[in-house]
Image (cartoon, rainbow, N blue to C red; front, side, top):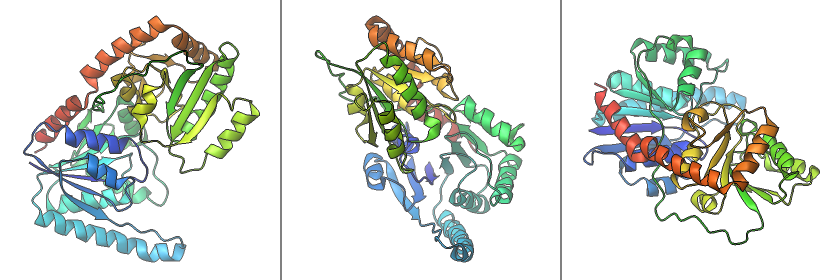
Length: 386
């Protein structure tokens, strides 16, 4: 089977991890993968190095100039160029399946063009659209095209694979055309257990180390967490919070000012994105996920589960599907700073409780969230598409 995967993303995140784990753990060795991605796909060299089963790759350059009059002139040319480019590619190369992997929905313009090109050359039967985030409303300038794509997907009953019930509820709520769509499927993400991971032994450590791995965005709950730490420090002084994440929107300076104003600069350290997440997890007592909204799954949670780091998180979106019971982690109401703080202290100071959660979470991970399980599930769904 020749499988073409198309994706278009502009920041480092879960899609990288998903594609890497999906392709590398694919159960049928003879299947061939071709990937189509944007020219400015972040961390491209490392992605290709880590994803070893890709046979061919195509890249597209999608230019949007800064000046409005140039945008008006060039954007249609970009679209036409992409459309005919992929018409030719799909005619020449006899792919069996197309899988469009999207960070969210509606699809990006290039992914829409790729979908249309495929439908004209092939059919709607051999395509899957994979969505990793909650639905967002269309902007006024994209509304007509988005509605057109919605109707095509609905009319031809194209299969949509989403990563959680939260994603399905989101797309049904905001796009009524999918309320009766019969080809919706949930497949949870999975990761490969990190080989050689060994938790660092803490010898007379001065601090309890908490870790947050998230993009610097308001929805991720940084300010909420700072208030939680402020409350917790009144009862437990030796807490250290380390935060790592993509800061393309330049939020760190503003957050640092808030930390300094609360005199917590010795306890909270803000850092930019790090590739060494498992090294960070190795040296942490627990992972904190204080998200306030728009969490479709929570990939970092299963990464922590896989290596025995307990998790405390807000009960939002798809997170409640990953930590489906307090046996596997601690879920807290997103509006309760006090409740989050008290549970955080209990988890840090009660070693027996931590060990019990770690043991249960590892079993939960092995059953539901291993990359090999995920890839097997995708193989079954893609094989069904005829």
